[in-house]
Length: 129
Image (cartoon, rainbow, N blue to C red; front, top):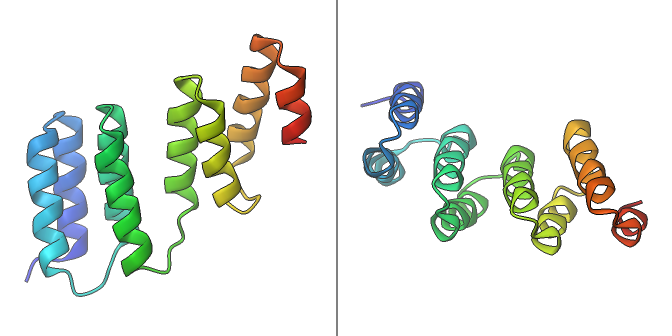
């Protein structure tokens, strides 16, 4: 039986090689045979999907992770928030920030505030506060 750690190593290697198809196959293989759900493996898959602008696939991985695991999901929510912020999709970024139940990383909040500053969006900054 292949361990979660072995899958994590393989997923990270495939991500570094930018082999998204290989990563998806490896992740699907793990999903079909895991003995304990490892949110960190889901986070690697989510990160790879977002880097390749595969938002539907990333959301699908997160949805499955939420069904199969008790989390924590903060890292995944943070990745989505940053992805949408980089695309100037503030409403979507806020959705994931709110999902983090007020516990986003401080550097993420700083980036959101910097975005508002650059965009001169006082209303958005006030809404966040």
